Each structure stands twice: as structure tokens, then as C-alpha cells.
Image 1 (cartoon, rainbow, N blue to C red):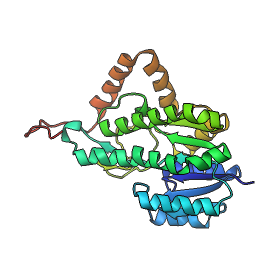
Image 2 (cartoon, helix red, strand yellow; image 1 turned 90 degrees about the vertical axis):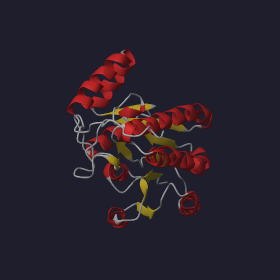
Image 3 (tube, helix red, strand yellow; image 1 turned 120 degrees about the vertical axis):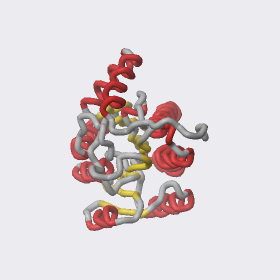
Length: 267
């Protein structure tokens, strides 16, 4: 029986590339994303279902879960890939932007895990959370993004202990910078891959290849890219040294600068 994978944020970047990799290995791929031309282009691909869905809308997400449960013989993997970032100093960040990052990166993933959890238990399948280097280490000018990815890792690493007795795997992938949206805005709310201070970026195809190898090996934690692997090791050995090196690279080379606040911080 053909296995089914659901990928949030499945119409572009890593989601699209990983969907292609899964199809190459015989999977049926359900790509969830906001309606648009990128999602529409997937509809003619073999073993693919492209569904327009705002995963932060609980009603839309629940209706999508019901329709997929009826349409597919099993749901074997959910890939929590959808995400946005916020680039810029915390002192200039709006609280509503911080909340928006959490709504997409964390709360929508938790909602999906709740809706598809019974299906994954039935198939003894896999939850695959796409985190980031910022999910286990600090990253200046990405306070909301780093916080949301730390939360994502905390959730799925804890869920792992609850789901293991049911034969379910909870895997966490931590890519370094992926060049997915060059030329898009590089400050404020943005799609990942838009940063101008990226370090040793990997392509979506390279990231998808490493991700699939980690999935096939059922590795609980999958760092993707040389920066991710080195960061994971260094941050575990010496968090203080990692932070100093990160600051040297990000704070000194970034075009982003924090201006003095004129009014008290509303946070």
C-alpha cells in the first residue's frame, strides 16, 4: 500500500523539494499551503494532492483533516514544515508580529499533531517537525523565530516519549540557512530564506536529500547542512563560545541595526 505524507508549507522551498523526494521513493504526497500559483503548479504531478489551506484557521484545518481521512487509506507521516520568520531587533518588534510567528510556526503545528495524531497512531507512522538551528541555539535579530522553534522542539521531543509506546516516531530536523526566497523582504515578517546575513546556505534540494536520509534512518534529530552540524556540536560543548561566534558573525555583518527607542518598549 502506498504511504501518504502530509506536508504543511508544501508548495515551495524545502516542502516542495521534500515532497519530490518522497514521490521518488513511492510516497503519495499531500501538499498543504495557502492558495496561489506555486500550489496550483503541483496539481498535475503524479501521486500528489495539493490543497489550499490556512493551517492557522482551525475550521479549515479540521475540514481538511476529515477530507483526507476519507480520501486516503492511511496517513503515515505529517511533516510540520510551514513557517515564517521575523527579521529585526526585538526593540522594534510589534507584539502582534511575535504572536503571528508563533501562530504559524508553533500553534498550527500543535493543532495538526492533535488532528492527525490518531491517524499516525493507526499507521504507526511519523511526526516530522522541521525546526532550525535557531531551535536549539540563540540567533540575534530572530527572537520570535528562535523562540517559536525552541517551543516546537520542546513539544515534539516531549511528545516522542508519549507516542513511542504506540509505535510512532517523532523526528526533529534542524536545517541551517536554506536559500528559498532570494529577493524577498529581509526585515520584518518574511518567508524563511530571505535573510541577507545567511551563512553557507544550502539549496532546498540538498536539504531534502539530507532530510530523507535522516528519515530513512529514523534519527530522532537530523541536523541539515554543515552549519547545522557544526552548530549542534559547538552549542552542546560550549554554549557561551557558540553565542560569541554567532554574535561576531550576525551582529557585525548584518545590515540590520537597532535604533534607540523613542518611547518605552510596549512589550
